[in-house]
Image (cartoon, rainbow, N blue to C red; front, side):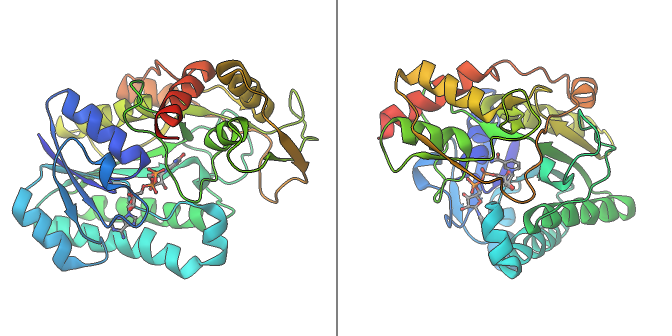
Length: 323
Ligand SMILES: NC(=O)c1ccc[n+]([C@@H]2O[C@H](COP(=O)([O-])OP(=O)(O)OC[C@H]3O[C@@H](n4cnc5c(N)ncnc54)[C@H](O)[C@@H]3O)[C@@H](O)[C@H]2O)c1
């Protein structure tokens, strides 16, 4: 099956391309390379274009006639969203309106969308089920929630069907070290801890050590990017089999603390992780972890590489190759 991977030059999209190609599907990447990397597009053609440009989208649909779309392209850095809300609403929401218009013109009716646990905001109960109220506390989360609502409206009126996958913390790299996480700026914990251990840049900034958690640091649910990629394949298959639209968490159901991550980095690299302690960041919930029942039932999803050691080891193998 030919699948249009919008944002496929980025971190998660490139791993999904690899997983699709490995099982014989045909990924076609559409990306403006604003944040992604040409060298991460290895499993099919790259069509350079912007989702906010209807003519770019119409051209890629006409040229490749994909059976389905997976949409990863977005502005993702939470702090940037607070500073540049208009740019976030433009790319993350208006961009999807533009994409959906092009899908309609091309009669392409199946979409897998990258949503996020940031749509829940500060959880009222844990583990986070999909029925938890969605009250995002930042611009990024609000733009993603707006898209979920947009998709629901369209699916209720048209033949269009979608899966919105609410990822927890995507992490790790392709186990063979071929591709990995290369955000710039990088705000994610594991790459930054590895950078600090390798002496690239300053010490890790540890935000808050006085939370009511096992060791005082925040706990997060880390999902290996290849497991996440497999969840996308399962979601696509379900939609291709005729399923109704659905939303689904993708996490492991287990939270690891920031300090546990630093310990894993030290164990894998054999290097100490220098860090400095800062105040809590406003809006960081102490704990976030997914309820995984729906992903098991709907997708048959069982993470295979999402233990902390494998995640950190795979990320480290990738960085050792490119640094
Ligand atoms: N990384 C995580 O932990 C995480 C967690 C939850 C949800 N998500 C979501 O997953 C998706 C992918 O995240 P990622 O970490 O791979 O991000 P990324 O920045 O690595 O990839 C995004 C890609 O989209 C491209 N892009 C951005 N705007 C575009 C536009 N207007 N037109 C065409 N291409 C455009 C970028 O060039 C980049 O290649 C995002 O939607 C993000 O919100 C990520």
